[in-house]
Image 1 (cartoon, chains in turn orange, brown):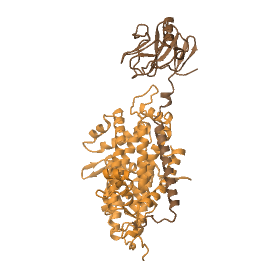
Image 2 (spheres, helix red, strand yellow):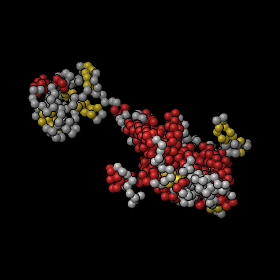
Image 3 (cartoon, chains in turn green, yellow):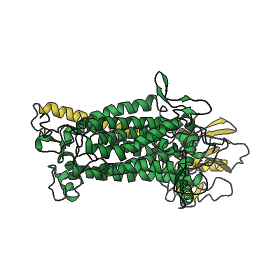
Length: 445
Length: 182
């Protein structure tokens, strides 16, 4: 970039670019990098996620102009924060649309990122030389989870309070320091005004930190280059095309489809993905059934399935600590993925056994989400359009065969086994299919 | 770069597609921008109100009251016949902001003004009988010494215009409504 000559002919653009070379940086990233010519539609989700981040920052900014982070209650017992959200919904021009773009947008941001990550896991995009790229992505995921939790709390509805109460409590699992951390997070003993104000401040700040990590993510991508569905390195210019116009237009098409669905949900089913009870202001009582937003459910499941204590030669780890450790571990282990997968072949397309375990992992995440949404001690079921498909039954004497909790333990086991056992062992024993010589001559055998 | 599209069969067609795509994207971005900026406009609970009823009962000749609506202040002053005569006589003078007294009042006895000096927005004094009214017996702005006559017209000092007359109407002989016309 630096040192390269300005690519512009227009004297105004050229003159400006020669003094501040940001235009050439954009031009360079669009045209100069060689992208594999065989990227399929699963490669759309990265740019979609980027656009969703912009949508979230924009809609959030304009809502922040109306939001009041205060728990002070009016004569009807409704807190100011909730009132200001109602004000956005009812009085601000276009405010209802604005808020639904933001709340539904969070879900669709996660949808884009989840597809993006599973694509990376299937095609081995985390393997050398893309380890840093993958790790930056993991940081983005964790930031997103934190930001979405903070934002959800701001409504100060029934479930907002429950989320703030329960999630800050998780930190008390940390020995010795836990209680101090709790007070520091809450700005007091209880979930109250101080917490709401710092959550608002952080919810405003962290998306920009996230945007910074996204820029690093893209810089890394441009350095190491895109992976591709065949998972093989680029061999010649015949394997590549420029980003513009090929992938700009492919991305625009995918984005249009994605936005059609997103905006349809915003328009016709904006509360479909939300908990209706959060449309009531909190009375500071915990509801009987606490659930997070859907995108946090698998991790919430891993947090809650540990109900027993572990005695390690006299060192007792409580179930609460196990749950907190497992939840942190379920995210932490993603960082190690590039080194846990020992197979030299990137793309799952050439790994027949890996494919089975990969789709097993996808199913595992869905099951864990269902576990997160259901009551631990009751019989587990899978909701279908035709009714509940029971996967457990009451065995009498208060014992349930196939309870939500039992299924949760099983699939928490699979989640970790996928990373710690399956991927390392599979790379040693699996016989991959023959790889093509290059992208431009894929059929060789 | 392999396959950079410089050699298209029909460049006009391509240019048309590119330009119309960019135009559609531009329209989309502009509409989104309009929608977002619209959320910043005053909401009805802020912008909507603004009318107040002022009872004229008990306002002595030569005095007046200051009525407040939100952050806005209005002067409702009952003029003496001498003050009315002075105001009408002032029509003939050379004024910085030429308006006749008849244009500024609905009933000569009652002068209704927005108490906001056109210079820099201070509230002028002179509504109640005891207040400082300046050389012309009307209103006096303490911030930068603008002096207004008994019709609220600028006579001396930095104000570029007369004190503004708000929308109002007489609901009855005893009551005016400020903030809208009948």
